[in-house]
Amino acid sequence: MAHHGLTGVLLVGGASSRFGSPKALALFDGKTLAERAWQVLGDACDERIAVGKDADALPLPFPVLDDGSEVRAPIAGVVAGLRAAANEVCVFLPVDCPLVSAEALRTLGRAAPAAPPSGPLPGAYPRSLLPRLEEKLSRGDYSLRDVEAAVIELPESELANVNTPAELSALSDARRRTT
Image (tube, rainbow, N blue to C red; front, side):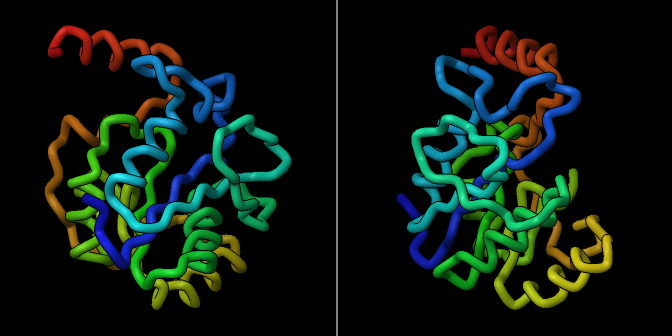
């Protein structure tokens, strides 16, 4: 059941330099990483926004909001998502985290600002942080790690992040063995 008052933001603007091709289009269990994440956000939130780069021209089945920045850093997508959101709280899901559940996103949203122990993304941030994040972005500080957030324990198995095709393949193989 989607959480009312929660905006889900899918981050698809990464450079994918280690992956070698756009991660958003990589297949995992018969769907692209972007399609999987979009579905999870729909299950968790009452509003969804995908943020990336118009220049990437990704052929996705949903619109992608350009983050308006030359920077390839998650903070640019977080700032764009907070600016565009209709709700006060946004949960941010990087496209390369294919196992995060809707329940994990709702848990983060309830505790915003919040992130798992592994780092700032996936994470939940309120629009009230927008001025601080805009200021960080404008001065070239692209880290989200120093943004104060409650540390929320989530199932470690859901926090897998894929940076290479080999990591995606290994995750897919491990998933097949457990299902």
